[in-house]
Length: 421
Image 1 (cartoon, helix red, strand yellow):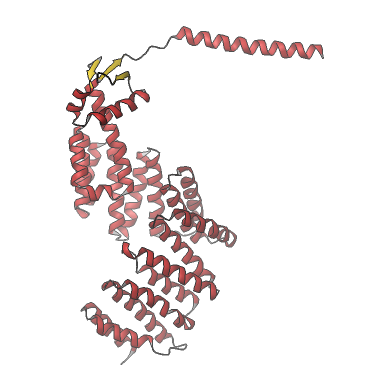
Image 2: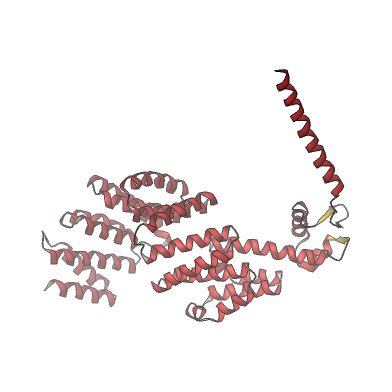
C-alpha cells in the first residue's frame, strides 16, 4: 500500500473511532526503516502526530508519555529542526488535561535530558521554556523562577529574541502570580523590548497585550487595561482561539464595570462579540454588571453564588470582584450611616443584610482608613459618627514658623563656627 494511502486509511479509522485499527496502521508505519527517504520521513512524522491524537482521544496519557520516549530513537533520521518540532508537538498534546500536568512535566524533563545528551541546544532551550510554562500552570513558582534565571543568562548571550520574548513573558506571569508587581512589570517591559526587534507572531503578541492589560488592571488603570484587553481579544479572535478570546472579552467587561461605565458594558453585552461567545461566562459578567448598577449587595452575592464556577475559577476576575465587592459594601454602609450621629450596628447589619460581625469588621477598617470619622462602642453595640475635623490653619502656620526659625538658627551657628576658624 502506498505511503499516503496508509496515512489516509489510519486517519479515516481514527475519525471513525476505530482506534485499534488506526493504532495498528500507525505502528506499522513507524516500524519502517526510513533511512534518508524524505517521503517516508514525512509519513512517519504524520504517523507520530496521528498516534498521539489517538492517545489523547482515548485519554491514554500514560501511553502517550511512553510513546514520546519510544519515538526518540527514530529522530536520528530526522533533521534537528524537524525533531525539535515533533517533540514539542507531542508534549503539547498533553495540554488541556489538568490531571496530566504532573505527567507532562516529567515527560518534558525526560526529553530535556535526552536533548542535553544529544547536544541539541535549540531543542533543550525550547523544552526549558515549555517547562517554565508548565511550572507556572502547576503553581511551582520557585522552580519556574530558578529555571528562568538560568535560561535567560544563556539566551541573552545568544541574543535569541524570540525565546527571550517568550521567557520574559512567562517570568512576568510568574512574578504576577506571587504578587511581585514591580518585577512583573519589569519582565514585561523586557519582553516587549525583545519583541520589538523581531517579527512577533500573532499569538505571542496577543499574550503580551493580555499580560499588559492584567498589570494595568492591578494598578487600577482600567482605561488602559481595557485597550490592551481589546487588542488581545482581536488577536485571539483572529486566531480562532475561543478560550483565550473569551477570557479577553470577560476582562474587557470587567474593566468597564470597574470604571463604572455601565453604558459601555451594556453596549458590549448587546454587540456581536457577546453573541459569538454567549454562554454562562458572559451571563456571569452580565449579572455582576447588573448588581453593580443597582448598588445591591444581595444581587452581587447572588451572582457570585449562581455563577461560582465561572467567577471564582479565574484568579483575575476573582481578585477584582473582591475589590468591587468591598467598594460596593463601603458605599452601602456610608449610605446607611450618613444621616446619623449614633446608630446601632445591629440595625446597619439588618439593612445591609450581613452579619453583625462582618459589619463591625468593615466599619473598623473604614474608620482606620479615615473613610469617615467615628468610634465603635462595642459594649453597647453602637457606632458613634463624628463630623470631619476641621484643620486649624493657625496651627499649621505656627509649625511652619518654628521650622523656619530652626533653619535660621542652624545657619547662624554654622556661620559663627566658620568665623572662629
